[in-house]
Amino acid sequence: MFESDEAISIVILAGTAVILILAISVVGFIAAYRIRKESFLKEKNVMQQTFQQELLRTQLEIQEQTFKTISQEIHDNIGQVLSLAKMNLATADIEQEHKSAEKVYMAKDLVSKAIQDLRDLSRTLNTETIVSMGLLKAIETELQLMQKTASIETSMNIEGTVSRLEPQKELILFRIVQEALHNVIKHSNARQVTVDALYSNQYLYLKISDDGQGFDISEETAGSGLRNMQSRAKLIGAEWNISSNAQGTLINISIPITS
Amino acid sequence: MYWLKIIYYGLLTLCLTALFLNYKRVGRHILLFIPVIILAIQTQVNGDILKAEGLGEKRFFVFHIYIPLEYLLLSYYYYLLLRGKWVSYFFILSNIGMVAFSAVYYSLNKASFYHPDFAQFVLGSVFVTFLGIIFFSQFFEKDERVDLISYPDFWINVGNLLFYAGCLFVMGLHYSLQKRNSELADRLLQINYYLNIILYFLYIVAFTCSKATKRYQ
Image (cartoon, rainbow over all chains, first blue to last red; front, side, top):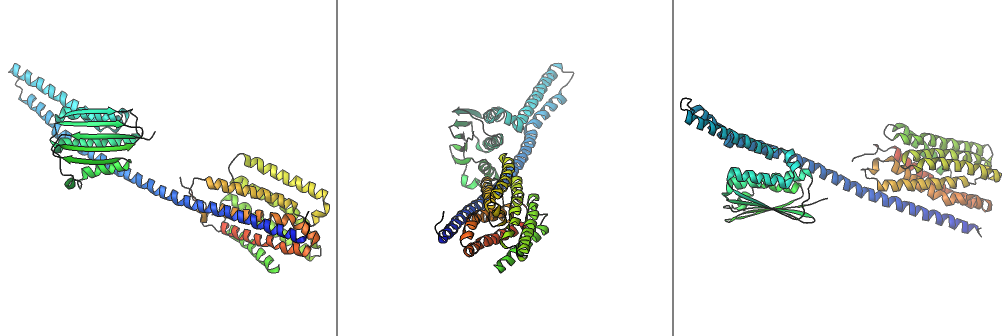
């Protein structure tokens, strides 16, 4: 097969060298790839942990805010209504039948209103209800409640094919909208609030606008309300921006829709 | 050659010591290397004793018995290490193939049984190289986090791939060359010694890995 010893030697040496070079290249390539992958997985792990921590912080903030809203609502609204009902019942004179019947009816109406307010409050604050009814329905309910309690005209427009987001994202998005609407009630003196929801192929665009007195954003961005909205939007991968002038305030939110 | 043999024995002893000292930290499947190394030492010692007794070239039957046994243990290591249904079939069939080939080959070439004709080693090397490549391809696709420094299987397979693939030519053509020019054949056989030194050095690295594979999701 081989003509000389030299030929065999060359075949052995060259063959061994080629095989060793190939083996070293394969091992080197795989080791380099694994080192890169390891650093990528490490980074991903850190990001996941940061995301979980942020999510937990946001959930705690939302919970805190929810307690505050409950306390405020009970004190400012339901408490007042029930006090009025109690006053009506206390001042009802049994001997003056006609007047007392009127007061009892008034007290009955006030108690009914308090019950309804409690139901509404429960519905807007219950996380499961919001998740099950979906983002748009939850916003619509919130707007109806706002119209009823704060006497502000509300409207909602939906464009495009509606598609659901992940429950966690919908909930956080709803809390952002809820905070924006509460700000309108508390600070804007607005008569009209509009929420527009536009679904494109890849994004959901939400626009919350009012015709209130507006405010100076540069002075207010340090406030925790706007900062919270911004950080929550960032947490779910949404873009959030605000503009305001004497004619009103506009908040834009856009979030990618992942199927 | 003398100092090479001293290094070789030294490395084998160190391998075994490292494995005994670190047996709790490496995976259980790696403990299979205890019999592999003991077998390697015993075969080498037996070969050297027979050489000293004057059997010379005829001592090689010891290696021809050792090679299928070594392959049995190595293939069992891969059977425990690799994923896939085919691994068990490959383990059984390759071992049957190895024993059958050795029996037929050395029955037909009786002289080869006592001489350095490593045809069965070449067959075993092809199998081990193939299994090593499969290990690296599965390792490449693995989604778990793996720290190379503390992953003994990586170092064992680097050693196996370099040694078994690297020895294919020198061991395959050794007998043909030896019949024509034994001095040159022995000189070239030094490649095998050097690759053995690399192999056992990498085994020591593997057996001294401080931790077992780190697994994260």
